[in-house]
Image (tube, rainbow, N blue to C red; front, side):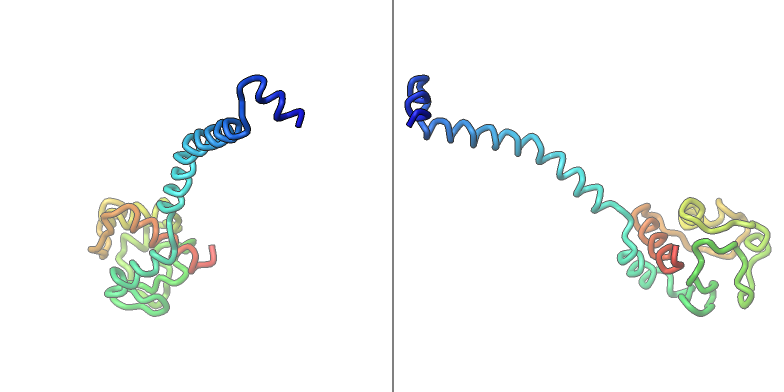
Amino acid sequence: MLFRFSARLYGFTPTRLMSIALGIYAVGVMWLLPLSSVVIAQDANAPDAMRGKQIFERRCTGCHGFDNDKEGPRLHGVYGRKSGSVPSFKYSDALKKAGVTWDDGNLDQWLTDPDKFIPDNDMDFHLAKADERADVIAFLKQSSGK
């Protein structure tokens, strides 16, 4: 009763007080909503090992097996492995001598332009899209237990 009386004294009815509260809430939501979409967008652009597996199966398995050598060496366990080190595969001299231990950075360079990264290697394929490279690298990293 006291609240109703004092609120009416200042010209605020319960309905008007509720409208003010809802208005403040709506302004807060409108102010915070764009911030939440930035977080969602960042998650959507994060490397995804499942997408990487799909890309690997579509784009890489023509030359590479996961557990067996083909025209290219098997790629299971490639992340963290030294270049040219699968004993059952005959690598180019350039790749054997490169001494690269495969990680995010050098796999990205390799998949972007193998000849620029290690000249005179035998790989003729590249992944032009940065998001596809990141996804494939995430898949190779995850499947290597890293």
